Length: 387
Image (cartoon, rainbow, N blue to C red; front, top):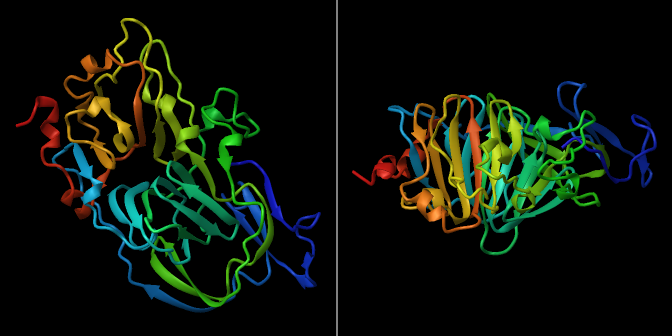
């Protein structure tokens, strides 16, 4: 999010000598789009380039096969084997040239990690954790979206014994707020479904960790590596700028309602190259006495639609087997809409009670073997009452 923050000790002028406790700090500029986009300037105690070893790491990138024949899918993510940490134990389910969608169940703190491919958007389905990074600590909990910029050294610290469940969207681009919500100067406009008050950045104190010969996993487009840093990367005494990890609770998204049914773009929350992310939260139903309250049937002519069902009663999917933790894929070329009986049930209700995350992609999504293994074979026939 492009608004300015400052944390810790920084000098009055950029690119000037900065001493803390008698030691000259080392600058690091984290910038996007070369030197012409948003950036932050960090002040390290030690050189962030001081590495003492490099090695390849054998972590396979997921392979996505085409969705042929064109088929709607219901993925039961509860059947994904429990993982270990939030980085190395992710299960990729859907993907294309722009974005990858998967899940993770993390029960322990992850290794230090740096993704040099693109931004990450992580939705916390359950549990609580702290995203620690060179920018500091960012506590998160169930219902939080967490945006992690490209190339940021971070780790997921798990709190409690129950762990966390995560929906992970890995992009090959930057992820930000849709331009339609921003003023020409980058402020969230009046009428946007959230404001700067709803966005949470790292805590206002630097995170300083001592250590030597510290491993950092690095994901690049060519594959995975391990860099061994001479000094712990968490040695930033201060920073300022507009690039940093941040969080937004889905419960702070203000739904837009209307007299008749509103189209899905009113739920848009994030945008990346080749995809958008929308939030569905409890809201009043359409209030015209003749309004059809459930979504109309629609054909995704230009996109594949993915819905992750987070909480509540998914009335328009009732009878299909979909529940909390399910993922549906409705691909281009398939006309989909509410399940039979949804319209009749909606007439007795004044509001929705569902929480869901939608990812619309503008290139076809493929499925991993892990996705096919948890796909409900009866879902395609659920509109026809089974086969």
